[in-house]
Image (cartoon, rainbow, N blue to C red; front, side, top):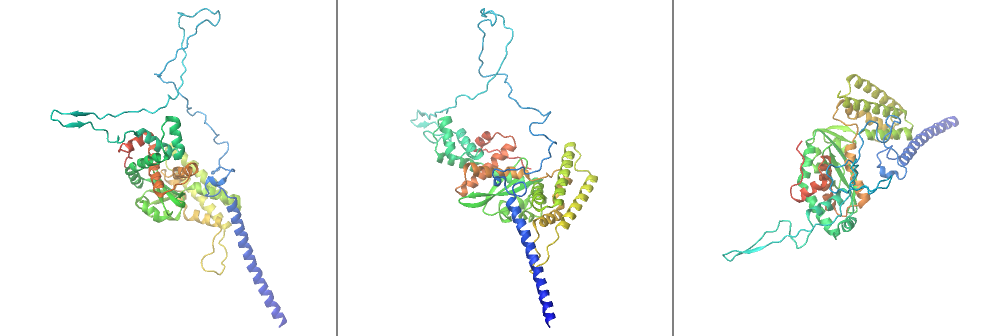
Length: 470
């Protein structure tokens, strides 16, 4: 009996030790994950670069020696050229000889060297007075001349100044108070903050027909980029959704981030082309589109696996993706689109081998007796996603229209962060929505090489620039 009791005690202790080992292993994995999260930055995760503080790092590994920084040898330089018809000419005559001191009046001209200076003229407001004359007809009726429709007050500012207000406050992110100071200092125009806000809002409303056409054109595009970012509006975090192409930008504000907001904006539900995004689950709901994943996100996650979790397969995947990118870029540059079939088979074979190494290094965790599948570690989740979505990861290799990353959308949504850092957050939802509309119009004009001031003046005149349908 004593032996049986001791055996049972030993068995119970072994079970306790086994359970404690599992607890320690789970805690160690959790500690490693938390340390990785604490030490991660924009180069090893999806954190924004603004969260890096003063220790910023490059988000994508750069191969030293392949392409030196700065201007590349053989590329065209940029310089200020002289004009053929200058506005002002100033002659500089020598009065006496630099050798003997004799007068040079009437001496023969040997050569003229020209140098030109481009500068701003004195900036001041141009006041235009409109006079409505009244004439009496022989019948006795007095008829007055008609003022232009936009001339409604005894004294007012004109459309060019209103365009400048929208340009400074919406495109250059100058706060309204500082923009008012700039108008006073540069032009002597004593405008108020309320005047700037009112006319910027009017310009934004005037661009709404064009913004709707921009959304339609993106929905009909063959390739489009999608992303979202948080924005502080009226003391609450809301979401700005961007849909863009190389020539179009559409920004929209919503209280939500997921598919409900995407349905409200109406672009993704009718988009049937190649949708490039960061893999957010809400995008995958729209099955009529062909999905493409951003590999810049993958490179950052893989770098985090190498740095924080000691995953050699992740470095192999980084090298492979960058090698495929080089081949894809070369194929596009030489017109041999897409990557050759032999190279595609070779790259897919290497991809399969690396995924197998990743699965081997990250086996599924043991079952704990609780319901559901045990949660995978970060490295396990990443390798599982790269395995499941391999066609979406490698589509840039097989389709020359597909980019390697989603940088187009990230560039187009970056001004939201710049706006909040420079000018602060939006105080009202209507003000933020008007900014999104105006910025969509401005960015699309900029992409199409349309002068922004000209485009804003056209919107004020009631005929905003409109994109060509896809």
